[in-house]
Image (cartoon, rainbow, N blue to C red; front, top):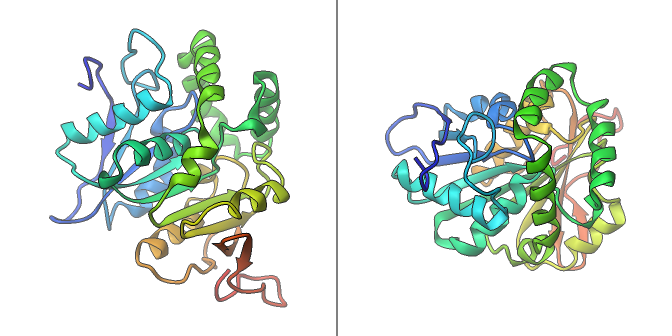
Length: 280
């Protein structure tokens, strides 16, 4: 129970003392599509994948929760599980929720992994976001449709409209630039919901935070579902403070960049044969 609402969640068993990793889903969805990546990391981390209140199999609060409300709900869920601090892995709308969590509870967040961040100007107005999601649907694995459709239908049109309005009022960029902890950003080069490369460089140039950006070739928006091996590999290396390299056994090629004030610097150039580089 989180503030009077039943919260459905999935959890892994881990060895005593294992660090905690919590996965936060996107707009209108449940945590189900995050499982392919979460399961690959469950051997090293005590893993939680909740359906936030109002989503998936969790109960509905009286009013649709906005981004600060969802960050509060995530913190209350962790309170209920006895978790003092965690690494948060978010996809899409889960990324603004992580940014708000970091703003409100900085002492409780170890690291942040932002996968396909969404919710900014690039995704407004609503008809534009719907068009982007439609285009993305054609780029995701066919199985994603069977996972996402029941979630969207359950979430409903009225909730979609109210939450989207709340997202347009949320200071996503301001909160993103406030981050002051190790941060991994993972993007797909076929994601229609993301801004262009110039906008990404512009945002990157405004942060003083230490950020690694991984671009997975061939991935669209739901990377946690479509490219779990590549994503889990990058997260695992990030958590170990090891150089992030491409996983040759997983679909997609990862290119890695470090953000420094004013620009993006590639860690390594692709190999002549087109494979993953020693830093990319």
